[in-house]
Length: 124
Image (cartoon, rainbow, N blue to C red; front, side, top):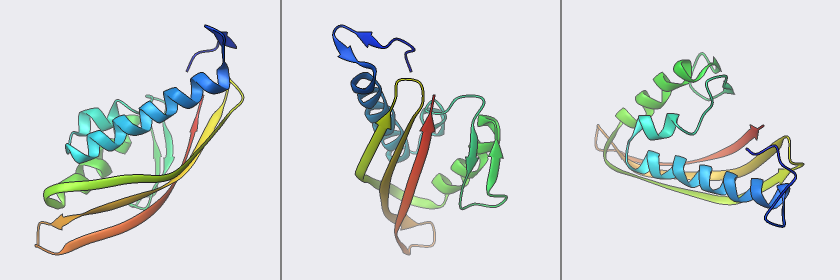
């Protein structure tokens, strides 16, 4: 994110919100395309994450790539993803977003997958 309080008359909060919305859309598009490279482009190298996949705690983008590959690899055919109720809050230096991702598709075993995940991300 930019460390500039105002750009072209817009507040940092407005700029951050637009950038985060675009980042979240890039992530969603990467999931739908099953493109782990695009997904990983949404994260910084110094990522610190908790996730539902053991070991649940990941430090660094490289460590977080493996669970994404596993997740994408469990689907036969397309993955459908929607982000709902995205809320973004920023003070211009640090921001967070909360939302709900709804994921559907068909597993490699031919079973329907339909799951909803609450998502919270922090950005600087």
